[in-house]
Length: 85
Image (cartoon, rainbow, N blue to C red; front, side):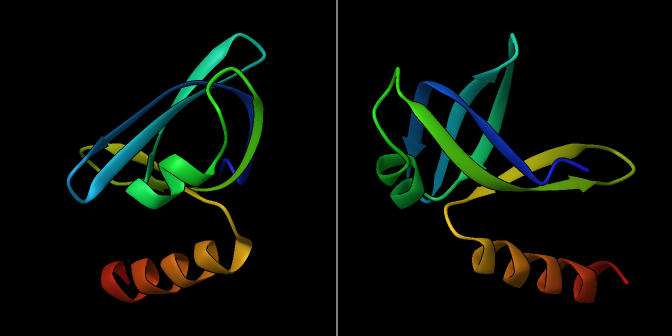
């Protein structure tokens, strides 16, 4: 399980209610789903950033969700556990 990532912000994408950031660490680029607000607040492209993550694994796909604050991650984990358990 990936709990957080620290690395260089390469790109940010925001479309409507969905945002994504691409963070490179140790030569691997992680595309992380975030809110558009988080995509803006995380930092400048080219700078070192830190983000908490929740790695959701399902039968058909995987997704990596990112949060600026740990309590946001905890809220999502509780909602996901209620939905899938």
